[in-house]
Image (cartoon, rainbow, N blue to C red; front, side):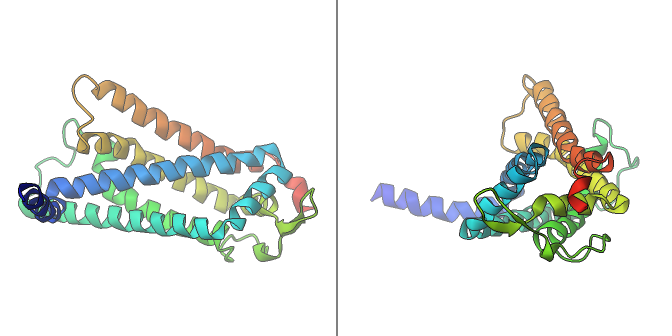
Length: 247
C-alpha cells in the first residue's frame, strides 16, 4: 500500500517538475543533446561524398529503403526541435518577467558571445534547417541552380536505379550563394552548439569546478569538428571536386 501511495505521489510530482524552471532546462538539455547526436550522425553520412558517387548514392538509397525508420527519426527530430524552441522561449520570457529592468550592461561578465546570442542564433539556425530540408530532402526548387533535383537519377553497381544524391549535392554547392549560405548556417549552428553543450552539462548536473575546463574544451572542440566537417563539402565543390558529375 505504501509503495502504491509513493508511486501515485511520484506521478503527481512529475508534471510539477517539468513545469518548473529546472524541468524546462532538463527538457532543453535532453532535446539539445538528442539533436547534437543527430547532427553528428548526419555528418558521418554526408562525408561519404568523399568516397565517391557510388558510395554516397548507395548509402542514400539504403536510407530511403528504410522509409518507416526515416519517418520515425524525422518525427522525433521535429518533436525535439519543437520542445527545444518552446522551452527556450518560455525560459527567456520568464527570465525577462522576473527582471523587468534590463541589466545595466548588455555584455554580462563571464558570459560568452554564444551564450548571449543563443535565442538569435537558434532562430537563424531554424531558418537554415528549414532551407536545408527543402533543398536536399524535399528537393524543392530553392537552390538557385536551375536544376530539377527530382530528375537526377543514377544506376548502382547492382543495377538498382536510384536518386543521384552525389550529383544533387555538387549541383547545389556549385552555386556560390548556396555554398556561402550553407557555411554561414553551419557556422551559426556550431556557434549555438558551443554554448548549448556547456548548458546541457550544467542543466543535467554534470558540470562543476573540477570538470568545468574539460566541458568547455569538449564543447568548443565538438563545435569546431562539426563546422570543419560540414563546411568541407561546399569548399571542396568550390575547388572543383565532383564537377565532372554535372557534365
